[in-house]
Length: 118
Image 1: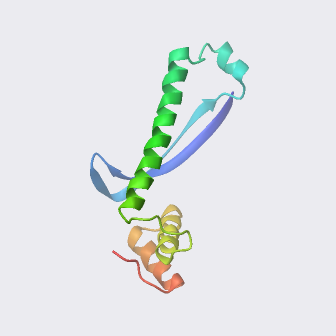
Image 2: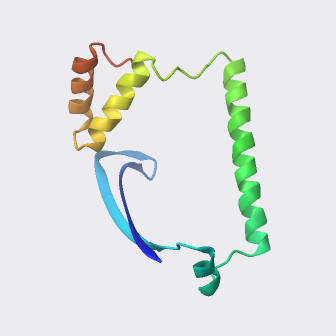
């Protein structure tokens, strides 16, 4: 096993947007081989494998149906080089680097030279 760490931040919880993002971090022991999983008697049952695969297939089919319905209704996904997509991505990056939302938005708008649309 290998110790792995993770971190992130929560911007909304329990149906509400938080006034300030809450940072979290943690760690867990990750398996490095199938043999470790079997030795720990942590191998999934056949039913768990079926449930996992069916959940995956359902999620994929749901995503495809959602995109088709949105396209049919005239709501197409913006291109990666769309100015608003670029602006939103820059804002997210600045927030992840520790800036608050207002500061991140202001900086991104200044750098890219156009405002964030509502």
